Length: 339
Image (cartoon, rainbow, N blue to C red):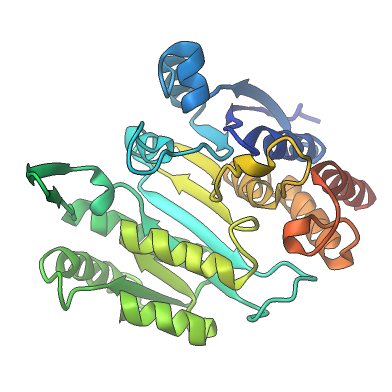
């Protein structure tokens, strides 16, 4: 029998609760049977204190070399300070597709049981290109950039993903009635790509109406295709349908590089108290396993996670339990051992 491949993965634990949930997820990943070699790096304020850089050159080099990274939450200052580490890494490695599957976990009482959505968000353009300047005192201009190339490739990603995973319908979400040129270009590109996939139904909804419709009846949607800002907002809204950001996975994907991350904040107020929920980062890591063609390991971890939630004996406080990070992690490991 051939020896199992060892996957070299760049690991960014982050700050706040990041190191705790990252440690928990690494323990679970290493118990799946997949083999890893971790290259660990600080980023953000911690990295600046150590290296004088918010993203050390060695971290860039590690991602360039390994082409896959797992990242915990990193605090982003509001209204000042350094630029978002997430946005910087996405641009650096052209991770143009943000993938956010939205599904209920068993055992959790939510208003919408049985949600099964996929959010596909363009990850490098729109309002997040960072082109802002002060025109005159008291007047600031922020530029939104939409390109035919960027819109076409994210639309093609969405349709190819839908075809591969048996999704039946895609809605392109826009505000082209107001932003006729930028959102209009995004829609034209989506329509052109849709013509290449006749087996997948295609529709279009305004972003404001979509938010209302998601709250009223999320089951009418299957896969949502969105520009950067709209996707950022709607993906968080949809996480709320199934229990919150503490449960939702996230993947930033490029042609040959990927960063998998927890999409919630760093929660410094509970850091070091053994109460953080590792589920979001674990579900992101399960997406990473599938990217690495470790389907059996991914299935093993997902089944164990769902077993723990279904039993409801070792859940963390944010989802109605009393367990801490360590107890929850132990329960997942025990469930894996029984598989």
